[in-house]
Amino acid sequence: MKWYEKIPHPVAMLFGIIILATLMSYLLPAGLYERELIDGRQRVIPNSYSLIDATPIGLMGMFNALSKGFKLASDIIFVVFAGGIMFGMLEKSKMIENTVGAIIKNMGLERKYLIVIVMTFVFGALGVFVGYENNIALVPIAAVLSLALGGDLILAAGISVGGITVGFGLSPFNPYTVGIGHQIAEMPIFSGATLRSVLCLMALSMLAFYNVRYFKKALNNPSKSLGYGLDASGLGLTKDIQAYFMTSNNWLVLAIFLAGLGMMLFGIFRHGWYLIEISSIFIMIAIVVGIAAGMSSREMSETTLKSIAIVAPGAFMVGYATSIRVILESGNISDTIAFELSNILVELPIYASAFLMSIAQSIMNLFIPSGSGQALATLPIMIPVGDLVGLTRQTTILAFQIGDGVTNIINPTLGGLIAMLSMCRVPFDRWLRFIFPLCGWILILAWGFLMFAVATGWA
Image 1 (tube, helix red, strand yellow):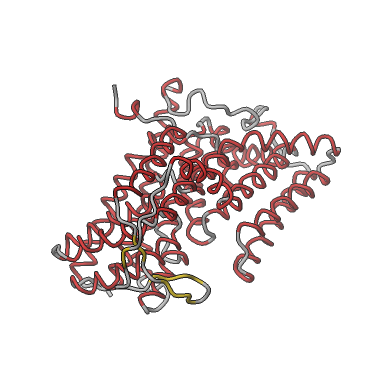
Image 2 (cartoon, rainbow, N blue to C red; image 1 turned 120 degrees about the vertical axis):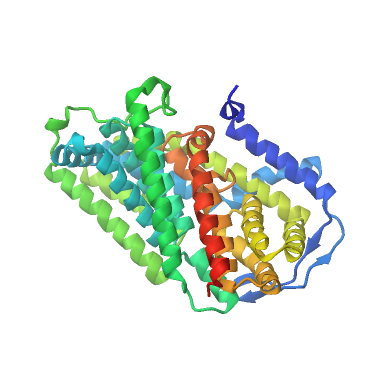
């Protein structure tokens, strides 16, 4: 039996982590760092860790964490539903199918590999410059494109979910990791962008090559591809490629969609909009698209419920995964894990310390999947540790970014990742089988950059 055949179902996998987190509340001492409010964010105060009375999680507390997790993740859950409804309306209007069909008709199927490469970088750029959860609703477009090219849903996830996650995780302009890290380290915001940009570009290039290689294998033997048997109903092209063209109504719907996205981006960058406002924009786009496409109220209602049914499993997994965070916070062991990891790093040589610092952040990423949350919880601890062992603060932040950003692509507790995979209709276990080797390659690449930063005293 191959290793990936032993991967449990995502529901079982997460339940195992929930049980492990509960047991850890008995095995690890409870402890807390003191925190201070800076610019509206709670930040850890270095050297303030202290033990507190144990707060182990009982059986009832473990199951209570499930409903609390859904409450805590309600914003992400609803943006999944809102994005699903919007895409359902766009798909019902035939705009996406006709647009993708017309693009491929004009470019030619003989350029299918070039299209995969270009779209991988397009989604990567969205991750670099736009953000993460902000792009959830764009993921199904890659599904339609991939199927039109003769690919499958796994390729669609590689293009969109992979591109967005790698781009966002290694972005030199990531405000949630690099930006907060530079604020904590009292350094110029987004300094060191050149080295990070080269790393991000090389990682996206590896992803593009990986996607094309998978595409070729899937074309040669579709029945043995990882996407074989996945439900792609309603996503594929329904006509011969030469029959596609854009109608005037398609152009109107596309204009509505792009105007809505423009309004969303303006709100994000100008007014600090996030998930609640993004969800509202998605719903508004859905309603206006339905009206513009001439749908009746019954058609719009039925499309809404059908779309919700498609994305509901992914929305469930988001809340389910968030219950792990509830258990760790209730058991007061997150700070203990960070404290013990930092103590190990202080005793190591400089190269080993930098390497294991990224490993430590990868471990913390499983328990604190939020980039900003992890930065505020661990960097105030790790930066002084880096100072003690001789790492520059820029290098410490790079180690943090690698640990958090690269492993996002395989993190079952990251709500945004699970949400995007649900929009592509790709189960997490199949995604893990597809992306795990690439994650290893990108980590090796990133560690090479990290060792270079240590060797040169990158500042």
